[in-house]
Image (cartoon, rainbow, N blue to C red; front, side, top):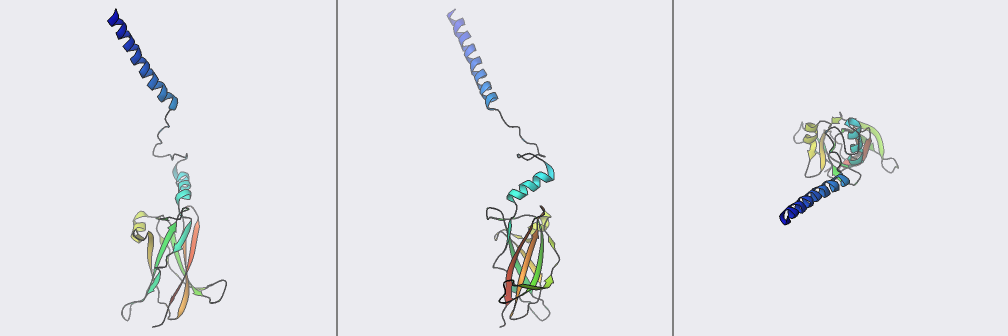
Amino acid sequence: MDSRLRLAVKSVAAKVRVWLVLSVCAYCGCDAVPNGNKWPGGGSGRDADLALYADYGPVRIDVLPLTEFEPGQGLDAAGKIKVYVSLLDKFGSEIKAPGVFRFELHQYVERSARQKGRRIAIWPDVDLTDSAENNRYWRDFLRAYQFELDFELQANQRYMLQVTCLCPSGKRLSAEFALGRRAK
């Protein structure tokens, strides 16, 4: 009888342990794992993508001071403007993001509250919504995009370069950068 009693107590104790573990798991519960179509915050598809883009997408654009005019080599070579553009999120971090970039060159108006004058040049938009095209312009070591714009700057003339990024969310970010070339 003594061995039967011990066996019964062990069996009851094992059942109690299993019941206790299962009841703790049921009490704590688990969230369902979201499938590939839903974001943890709810929603799916394009609306969820735009919501996530709004949280972690660019909120500011900056033209880096590395931006400069590079004169052409040789008699027929045209000069280039090397433009370095950084997109910043709401935390101030440089990020890589899709968008369409537009470049415009304006006259620089001296001693004026509004230094951007008449537009001199506009280049075709650069669409970086395709990942392969985006990677082509991205410079990871700078955490910025690099663009080369063909243009021959005049000596002792200053210009105002305006860079605009049209984001997939509909947001338009813009920055200006004073650019010039001194005579030798």
